[in-house]
Structure formats: C-alpha cells, structure tokens
Image 1: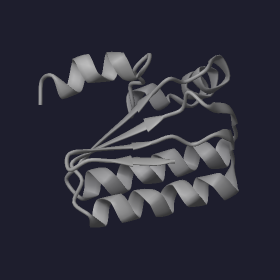
Image 2: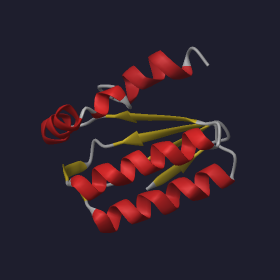
Image 3: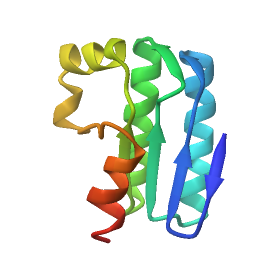
Length: 111
C-alpha cells in the first residue's frame, strides 16, 4: 500500500474508501508526516467507491500534511469520486490530477 522515498510518499488505497479504510489512511498519513516526507500523493486509481467518511478522511489527511508544512495531492479519481468532489466543492481544496503521469509532470519536474 505504501511506496516510499525521501521526498515523495504515495498512498494507494484499494476497494471501498469508507470509515475503516479512512482510519487506516489517517494513520498512514500521520506516520508519513512524522518521518518528515515533503510531498504526499493519494492515488485513488484502485478505489472503486468512496463514501462521506472516506471523503472526511482525505480532508483530515490533507490538513495533517499541510499543518506539518508538507504538500498533499490526489490523482486518478473515478467518476463517482469526481461527482462527490463536485457536490462537496472539494476541488476548491484539492485539484485532482488525472493520473500519476500528470502529477509527475506538474509537480515533480518543477520541485
């Protein structure tokens, strides 16, 4: 689930992102922040569905990373998650990248 290097940490949850997996996501992000990682990318390509508690977990994860001075990004959201983002105005907080390649071009090549 976790892939690590010094600057970037990628989190790749799978299946349904609900309260249980959301709690794991928050624990993973807390561990990452404690290690001093500068950039966290949440790659949702393998998430089939997300409910409101999953959305809340993403917001808390973002807040945790940013409070520690890091940067939080998200990529590869499906149509259901995109609709949830639009309904909740999440794109004001997080602008999702289409995929990891788009993220790499926009962020890693400019850092």
